[in-house]
Amino acid sequence: MNKIMECVPNFSEGRDKQKIEKIADAFRGKEGVKLLDYSGDADHNRSVITVAGEPEALKNAVIEAIGRAVELIDLTQHHGQHPRMGAVDVVPFIPIKNVTMEEAVVLSKEVAQTVGERFGLPVYLYEKSASATHRENLSAVRKGEFEGLSDKMKLPEWTPDFGPFKPHPTAGVVAIGARMPLVAYNVNLGTNNLEIATAISKKVRHVGGGLRFCKAMGVVLEDRGITQVSMNLTDYTKTAIYRAHELVRIEAQRYGVPVVGAEVIGLVPMEALVDTAAYYLGLENFSVNQVLETRLME
Image 1 (cartoon, rainbow, N blue to C red):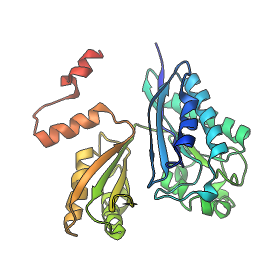
Image 2: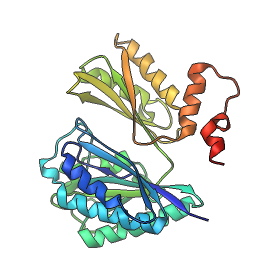
Image 3: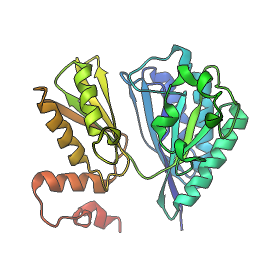
C-alpha cells in the first residue's frame, strides 16, 4: 500500500517570482513527490506550496525547500499584511492515505530536528506535534512575530523544541507540526477601511466568540483598493465554508459593506466544496459520492 502524506509549507515571500520558483524547484523532479499547487500573494507577501508524496521522499524535499528559503529570504527586509515569524513560517504535515496522524507527528519531529541542526533554525512544534498545550495554537506561537523573537525566546516557556535558543538573524524561526486538512478561505469586502475588516474578523473567529474552527484577520488589498477577511478553517467538517462566508456577510451588513468576492488559497478537499454547493443550491441528501470524479477514483 502506498502511503501518501501532504505538506503545505508557507514561505514569507510573495513578490519575488524568481525566489518563489527556486523554492518550488525543491519539489520538482523528485521521485515519490508531486508538486500539486503553489501561489504567491503580493499583499500578504507570502507563498503557499502544496505537495504530496511518500513520507520519506516528502521529508527530504521539504528539508531541501527549507534550506533554500533560509538562504533566499531576509526577514529584516520583509513587509506584508500577513503575520510571520520565519522565512519558512509554518510547515504542516497532513496524513492523506494509508498513513496515521501519529506517523505525521513522527515525520514532523524528524524534519524539525534536521532543520534545527543543519540550518541553525530554531523550531517550535505545534498542533498535534506540540510539546506543550500552550504551543498547539499557531497564533500563540507566532505572537510577537519576527521582530519580537529575541525577547520572547528568552522566556522559559518559549524555549525552542529544536535548534538554537535564539532566532536566526535573517530567517527567524519555523513552526512545524501535524494537523488535519485546513481550508484557507478569504472573503473580499467592498471597502478600503481596514478597521471594518478587522472588526468583522474579530466577530467571526473563535477567540472572539465566532465559529469554533475559524481563525481570521483583516487585511488590506492595496492593489485593488479593498479589504479582506482572511480565514483559516481548521476543521471544515465542523466549520463549513458557507457558514464562514455567510457570517462575514451578516457582520458586514452592520457597516453597509458588501461582499464583493472570495478566494481559496491552495487546495481544498472536494467534500468541503460539495458541502457548500449543497447549501447554496438547496440540495437534499446530497453527498460527495454523487460526484462523478469521486466514483471514477474508486
